[in-house]
Length: 386
Ligand SMILES: Cc1ncc(COP(=O)(O)O)c(C=O)c1O
Image (tube, rainbow, N blue to C red; front, side):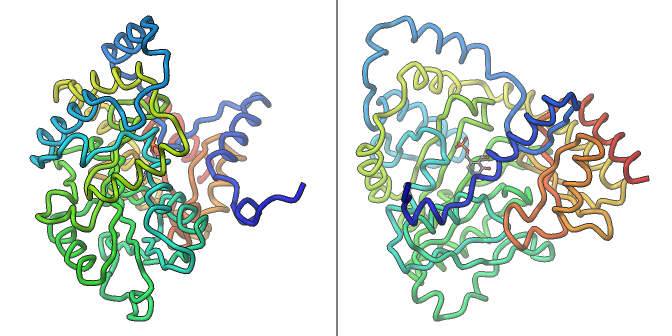
């Protein structure tokens, strides 16, 4: 069959391939330890599950849901945003529920970019930023994220001829894959820069609520006037261990939020109502739930950072997000190391190059496995590297 250029130019999604590789190896009897995807292994909160099951019993909820989400979900999210960031959002104007933030990234790209526009992508990056740009014919321009700059893009280094065609700047803090965070000085500069150069900023904040050591990541919308140029994406996937539920939110610039709503309502038919009720329940959970969950992640982080450093893989001391970003052992490229390690030990890590060329020399290690499994993985790595 003759397929479209869009499909012919679209690479397979890395993690779809990775899942297959893992399944094949497991089927062959290997005890695989995957520290690869950022897919929370801990359960969704009990009351969320109960609310979902209860709402499923009501026939009314089996019908088509609202295109733009239920008013109570908008209100719960606005209240959460106010509590968490001290930013006021107008429920139906500034907020759009999404079927996970991943689809929202693609839709915002399509709502802003035309063919031939430049899309500014910090590298390494979550792969969707590049595919969302390329599928509408926009040209990704990479902004390398360097360790010595704290993995923040150097906006001043973008040449004038690139800026003249640039429409969109993607940002993502806490960052996947580097786990870096950005503070007020960076976000204020980015907002001023976007205003000056007529850019839209998409801030992807999927890891907003996974943090350690009491350093709470900030929202770009905390910068005064940011919603004139920016939207932000949130997700319940990592925040409340609800990746399978598919709940995200787009917030910020009302014109762009409304544009994405128009696009989405022409494509899907909204979020299953029981899932919306479950999401409301999650958004109302006490801060203690998060604190307990993050304490579990902190112990895993400590184990991995210490273990990687002992193996000579310089690991960054992550303060937020689900990943450890560590240097590959001397002499290995990122891909060679992860392939060799998987073949030899069954421990599956992600090469930094899966997130762009600037990821060479690094691996991304996910903290979504128990301390016991992480300890076993580290032991296997130690024996293999001996
Ligand atoms: C940086 C980043 N953004 C967005 C997503 C998508 O999350 P979801 O679609 O589950 O909300 C992910 C998932 O791994 C991610 O790492």
